Image (cartoon, rainbow, N blue to C red):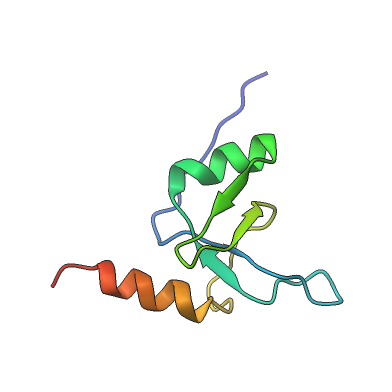
Length: 79
């Protein structure tokens, strides 16, 4: 049996605090190489804003993004 993975080509965003219905309040920016390891092993990742959490969900287009992560990410882009 073979297992394959796909690479996400957009900024990586991951979850923050859960709301009452298991929907993340915010998704955070994290390094791609940390995402896969966390999803497989449950290891904690560190978002750009400093929040730590295990990767459990993938953001969909239009998902709410952590304002601090977004501000930091935009500041890292070269013009």
